[in-house]
Image (cartoon, rainbow, N blue to C red):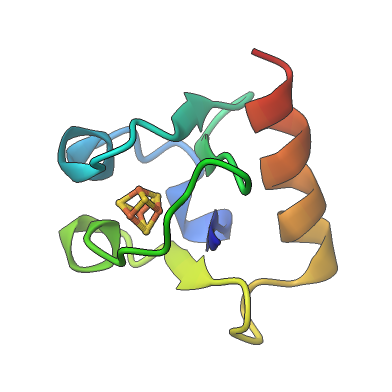
Length: 77
Ligand code: SF4
């Protein structure tokens, strides 16, 4: 799955939300998150993100803390 990281904080451009084919973006406290079980790994959101905040979960930028935070906020809906 893809993961939203710190560059998203207070961004709220929402470009990523509009292109996601499975609507797996959810609102966290001050950023958006991706539901890890709903993301189909299409990668379409990555070039759309103006903040360059989205990474595959295999990328070093997708730290365990960010993985946990995406899971936590996406699952709270
Ligand atoms: Fe949605 Fe595709 Fe981005 Fe996953 S990789 S969040 S399915 S647009």
